[in-house]
Image 1 (cartoon, rainbow, N blue to C red):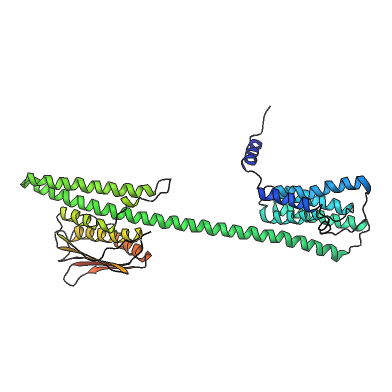
Image 2: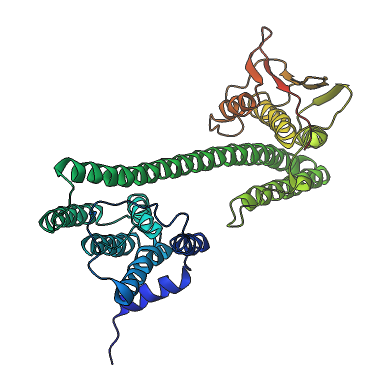
Length: 395
């Protein structure tokens, strides 16, 4: 026997998505209240006809109609169209048969609300069917002698429309909230991509520039002093290892797990000395000075300070090779101040090509922390990078 694949997928989806417990509880609660004498008479009513069946048969029909008005609420969010069509049919039959008021008829209004709130497809079609069915019901009730008039039927229809529109309003509100969450997630992802791009730029530019300078120096001394070339090659090897370590930490962020780099692998201000040492190994005379008491900072502040020194030293190696460079770090109570200066005119040709994004990315990073970064030439022909980063408590 052939089985429709679409039907199988539909059954699987139904099985994998259980009926919400709150819907089952609502259906059971309305059904129970329908048999409580103190509230049983509270119900929407439009026919006001005398009962057509009395005695045992009337009781049995009333029980079936009550259950048909209440039990479909268990699927009001999963199958809102079926729920509202079944309850509306039971409501119409109860009006025609003149079945006494029962709280179970409230289920019809709840089904209308659920249809407005949860019905995704065929909303117009279901609305048209309900409207046409109500018009037929009004005509039938009038022919059976209902005391209601046109304005009464119209007022009841307006009440049903308000209930439907209330559900539609909730549906629209939920959709707008979901859209806001989606846009916020996209903005966060874009910001994270931009941050990773800046970090990749900083890491690759700094380490590759240092390796280029060290390789040129090793090539130069290889012909004049082979023994000294070993130190240059060792420096290249160490620089390459540092670059690979930082790149692995950044690539961990891009993995499907979404985990951030561990603090042990995230560059901090405590490793600024490593940057100075690496620049010195590249032949750049660098002097590091620190003032103030070192305080624990947040990861963002630590990383931003590290990147400022890294980018400034990279530019110094590129454009002021061999020029004296100073790195000054002041640890204040409210700010971390970093100043990197070089002396002498810049080189006409940099030792490595520039991407032109380093300082721009640094300014964005520092601004995100409510800090400020200024970079520009000095009066004596050198260059100065100055950053003021608000302190952040380590979390």
